[in-house]
Image (tube, rainbow, N blue to C red):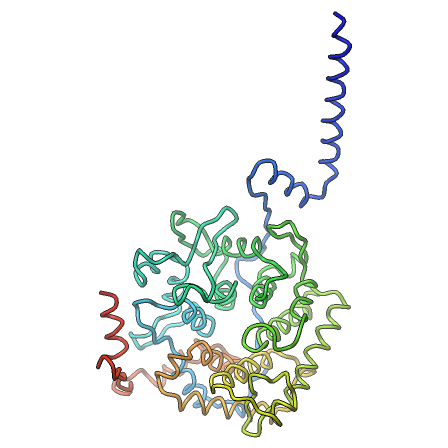
Length: 434
């Protein structure tokens, strides 16, 4: 009987402790409560931001200037960057770039080309991937608790996406719907929305490549979601993402820093309509883009191209650096892309744009099929940029062009044969597949 007061006191203390814990838990911010539940249960607690639309937003080009690129020139460029890929060991990176340029609804009269639907389904259907790479190759897609992860990284050679969220950004620009089916190994009933959710879960402001995440999030989340939380329970916003693109030297980032400029211009265009940036961050972003514009004025070579080290300004011209021609294609093509969506206040004089277009059209049209194939990811941006300067999509223009210029197989150049094997690229791919 003497122990009852002690027991009652013990229980009362325990109840007070539990009550205090419950009170503290109830006062936690939602993301901190999720983190605590994860620590206790070992299960992922992630609530992705709601995507209100089934289609991504579209940033339309602002100019239609036949003096930058004529119909005939655009047709010649687009013919060079068509989806001429062999079925065996199809590189996701090449397909991503082609799909970004041509979009999911592209159709070609040439039966040897991959239509937009073929490219989209290769990237989103594990069965299509296996047909190209075989069962032994690690899958491009991986089902995870938060969604569908895309394998990426240069260390995976040719069977993965090269850049983080590049596949997502390309599918987004290709206007693939959020409810489009995604078939990952072991989980064939996912959708594009699950790819978006996994990207949001994984996103880290401190990683090197944030350009494509910034663009994809802008086109899917704006304007309903201006702030959200990632899988590490960190608050994110378009302000933080824009400031991340502004961080560091202008040449940092992928493709000589040009993708950052494009992503920032996308965010500015979205802010024009939806006010997703704070006035302070918008002011910083505007100043940054104008500084890029000013650098383009002094780093452009007499023949019209911009070098890979364009951020060096005048020194890029006075002390030229030896770079492969493909790097000039990268810089010039990418700059022409963001300029095509940039309002007048960010524009360089139109005669400078025309000079850049003349140079890159000439390089693209005169390149051999092998040169285009080996550098396809770079040249694809040329096709996209030139179509944008005519305020059209490559698929729309090509459909109209083929109506009056139907495909003629006799006009196709003969496939070059390897000196080592005596076989064409198609024959080598077919042999490798067997």
